[in-house]
Length: 330
Ligand code: SIN
Image 1 (cartoon, rainbow, N blue to C red):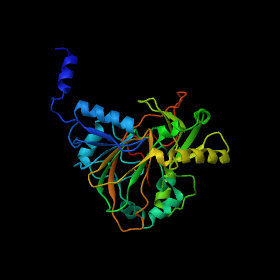
Image 2: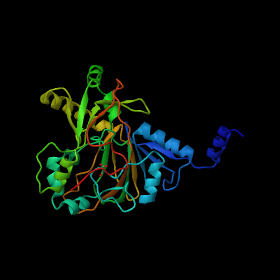
Image 3: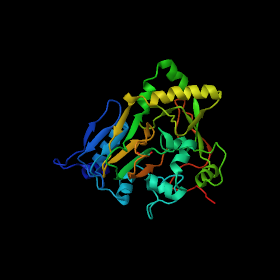
Image 4: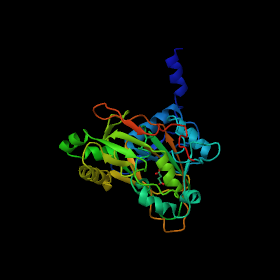
């Protein structure tokens, strides 16, 4: 038996094996996947089908899954190597350095009451649409978010398709934006209030990269508008006024409702997005209510983006985002 026959037979599915059911949920982005238990190792066929669905629909949703930290990490590893939790998280759950827990109460406990209100005025990352960690020279390739505690009302997340946003531009504007590059920055441009521990750590650990405004997806070859209000600071090589006007146009394109999908979380829901082709919006509608919302995210180590001319992104400050925790706090 040849090695090829061997592999074919090993990965062959019994005729009766149930296959994942993939159902698109919006016109440009998003699909629900049912009929697969992602807490267990995936067959080669299911892994390939889920990967294809991710690239095609940009964000895929699973419901009623029974994941814990270990099985979420094991699920993610089937798609690639994982990063450390987050560049600015020092306290991931013990033994699970890959898990980034999103729970506003956690941040208030660490950085004091009013943290969210304070940072919202300083760091646009907390303030709207973003693609995860694009201040790094190699932003994550994908993110996998699992709901643990969800409020009875509100708390939905939205995603937008950055490929559709690029393709929706007129041809002359596509050609123009393909020539541009943009600086992405994790905070740090303002003076530091030395009583503010978070501001100090961000300023002491600058994370800045320059990316092409149009990114070519390494798997699909699709072009995506790779800017986001959360991290993109300016267009390089133009005046501040021009930069603001260009970014304003691009932000209004990437946030057009027709390119988006909105997801209502339940405990056990999982969203998996292609971070090279989407931006997302965390909810702000329950901040005034005393409701708890806790989710756990892992991210896949990303490649260095390339523009249509083949030119790569450049690191300006900080280090690539890998499985190492590199932020230093004194
Ligand atoms: C995130 O930005 O990854 C979190 C999104 C959310 O809290 O809904």
